[in-house]
Image (tube, rainbow, N blue to C red):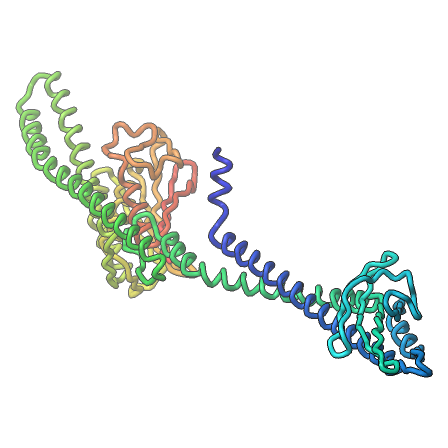
Length: 462
């Protein structure tokens, strides 16, 4: 059942149109062939009828009465001429009241007879051949009496079939050329007909997952219902997504305030507590609050990135100065772990970029924060900017603790962290935020193991 359904789906509109136009072209070509062949057959038949009529007239002209006897001076030259055309066979007969005066008695013709002005033509099969017959009734006056003669001439149709065969062979070639040309025109017509559909599909296909803008309404009238339905679906989906993001952001915001109070009260209780067990519990509470607070902050960041990705606000700013400001913000956090920043730049201090600065800074902040969290104590974090053939890239290199394992398949998964990170405050959202921000800006992010215990994050812009 699935195979049948798949076949139905794969039979595209283009193929259906092409098949219909191909069948129509074949029907037109076949009709054209039969019509032209019929016209040719009628033309050849009319030509043969003209020759037979002329021969009959020559016989009539040779009939005379002498001494009350009807005599005929047969025009053998005319018969020879008829037989020479296509090597056809000739039969004739002149009879009176059923009595054969001259000619072939065995030729089977019992049809009607016309007159000199309006002869009768018929087709007769004789000796496995088809003959064209012309017959008239001719009156001759002998004395005062009138005598009626029946004159018949029959010619085989070899020349007719030969001419028809030759012309038909040429006609088949011409009709085939015509059919091929019409089929080619049908293909071009089909391609042109489905071009708006392909453009509509490309417009939808080339969008990124977070691009929820309405599709273009500049489509043919037949595609307008589809465009409107898709835009309506996107609008409903965007509204639902925005409501979810707003809820997450508001929930995170409302959680942070009581968490700050809990942390403050726990720290005060820790200072006053003298029981070792209570101090351990209070430290666990403070650590859990820090993790929850960090998760709430990153949920806010994630919601903001998704919102800005849908409505980016491009700004032009200097890369060097912007990165320097972000690095300075993390110097206190780095000093707490005895870490140093080694900042270098291979681009001009005046080099500018046009992108959403909020997304750009969010991606850089989360990368630096991730490097600080997992960097080994008393190590150096290298941050550098360098040019590419198109665009530039930012590299952040840090030495990680030997107890921490990095799983490349889980780097960008939400709420997923590597082994040996339980004691490190984090939510597993940082790199997911970086990936979302990079996709929104058209950048790429990748990680590479430089040495045994060093990880390099590379953020590339084009």
